[in-house]
Image (cartoon, rainbow, N blue to C red; front, top):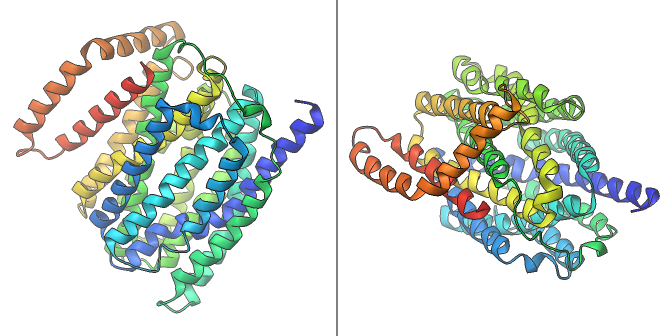
Length: 440
């Protein structure tokens, strides 16, 4: 790609993210607040997430098994799913029934998953590792900047629009603004992705497995935090909906700064943010004043950005030999799997916030442990030692995962009546097995 074409390509993607940020903050960013405002508790929110995540995971898995879908008419499909994702939000607030909302949101999740695959395919398929990191960081910052505008507008509309029509108006406005970013996508040249080639085999699969397992656990903690935190603020601490929206705003500001600071850091530096992020749930639980959670949100977003960059940058590093097609699809599957796993845990936890924040802390701590022991680029151990542990984890998984699943079933049957937390262990086995089936 020539210098000017590369420059134009990068900035079209950055500008797409800039316009998309307002749309996302006015729709998906306020979705949990919308659900809570119409009477949904943690269990109902988790059900909506469960149904939509399962459907989108199945679709992403099907594309992973038959990636030919990505290699034909790339531009047409990219623009089509970009538009469909945005239009879906117009219908979500019209019928406020749990099942109907779940069905419509499932359509959104399917469109969003396919769109995410095509956007990742565009970035990973046309750029090298350095450019991937650069575009990822700039898109994150650009989206964060426009998120500020979107959340600021969202807070204003939540505070002053009539209750009966506020979310219909907000989601409709978000849809219209989102279609501006669809217009920009029309000018992105993806012709070189037509008939792209798949790698013959997966090199160093133990690295992909370790990175994927870490990334799922990390994103699981983030999704679960999102499910639990807003109901905790609004129902338990009696905070207003605009305070919950203000938390999103402060988190967005922090993520912009974090994107600029963390984007040029090494993996060894990023693990500091990963470790600090584990303390976010403890701060949220021990501080009972809703206003203070605006600051806690800034802290968790700043540190989570560093942790998230670990996963994203690892796949940028592995992209050369793992392949853009598999990388782009697997990243979306990881996100869907994490969201799917968070739903049953959220349904089980319900409004038991003591247990919820304890589980959140343990989940984030587990992600930190996985990264610092099994991922060579991040580990606190010597790189060769971490690589050895990664191989042992992967090889033992291939040989013994069937036995592990059987043992887990027996364990669940015997322990569930005494300690319902075994559901979480089962969820981890599900993640573990799914990643093995995808990578091996």
